[in-house]
Length: 211
Image (cartoon, rainbow, N blue to C red):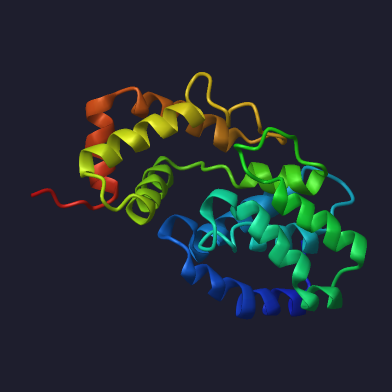
């Protein structure tokens, strides 16, 4: 696939730098990973506009530092308000992209409204155990800095069980075929259900020095 070089240049120069304001679990490395997965998953479908896929993935977490709990709304609004995107897309395409950002969260009770939303929502799922552990830790350091290490570890473990365990809310929200995610579900569930091993791995991956 070929992405419009001018669009790519604009996003790399003006959108990626905004991710330096986010925590380390939602930084530019994370968004590049989601872009790569989005483009790869999009290959399963015909008549896909890859410029749209690239742009949705690039914007999906841009507003995380503004309001983490509602970042999908903030991020979608930021995409919608970006006048520069009118150089590359028509109004209908911009509307679809904004809706896809609004719809991307795993915790959403509604199915994404378009195939673009389904692709990026699927691509945004964590697929590496190490990423799950660093993201949960980074979020708690930023949002619950007064919590003890043990509280952070247990809260992270319970969050991952609720999200990816047997009845996890993220498990049934894969809208495209993704074997990488299916393997991750098993690996993270096995780890989270072993409290001692989870604690060991959590400390190791996050390079936490205990007193």
